[in-house]
Image (cartoon, rainbow, N blue to C red; front, side):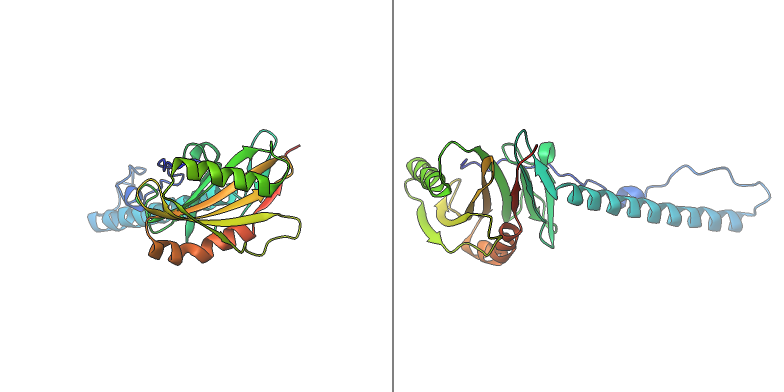
Length: 220
């Protein structure tokens, strides 16, 4: 598991401010007076602004929906973006991750917390062996990190999950929850990383809900 915090790219970049810029409209009949022309132009601008705003919302909604199923060469997973969060996946996610999530009222490169998922090959025979190996390697790279084994959230009976807490994780002194999840052809690592214990506490339930709805699949 990487201890770095790369900056994600934003998927939805529609701006209402951009929609309000004057647009070049069709020519109006010369018989219209100045007052009528002004009203007509104003009406056209309002309609255009509403149309562009609606298209922007549709684009963002489609982007979030598109991250409902994330897939790779021989793996895939079904997930749900928590209410109040935005998501980016595949090439739009931050480097090294399959999906990245951040609070919708914050910018991803300055958010107080991020959720992301990485994928690992299924080289070890059990999820516990994989999680233990990942924790040991992380501890060796960051000896001051404090590790806590936690009770995983309720998930599908067919989905195996191990939940771990990291305190004082690099870079800086971050607080993290990490869910190790077993899939048919890969292991998945879901992480929420927060700048403080307070931030983590505020987002904890969102992360647990995200993990509880995480469904690994095999891409055929």
